[in-house]
Length: 86
Image (cartoon, rainbow, N blue to C red; front, side):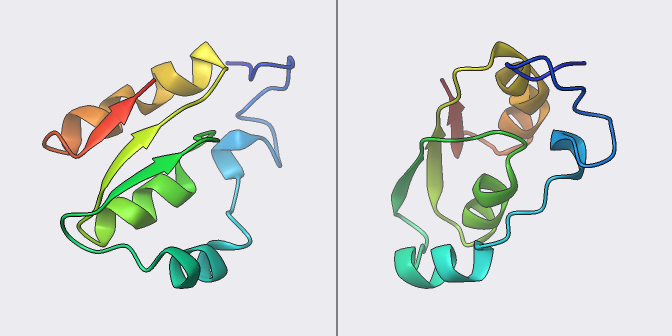
């Protein structure tokens, strides 16, 4: 599977292995909690979105790469309506 720029997301360092390096800082800044609605404008592999969902907040996640959106559909289905992928 490739990302929007032809990268193999399963390659070492590809999206499948992406680690959101500013996760703690983003979560601290947003302080997401149940009832919040957060927009993730760079869904990618979903690292930030997963953490935000774990806080109980809902997420609208956007990505221009149709492969990233397709790969996130299972997370969307598992979210119980808390995640909308665009």
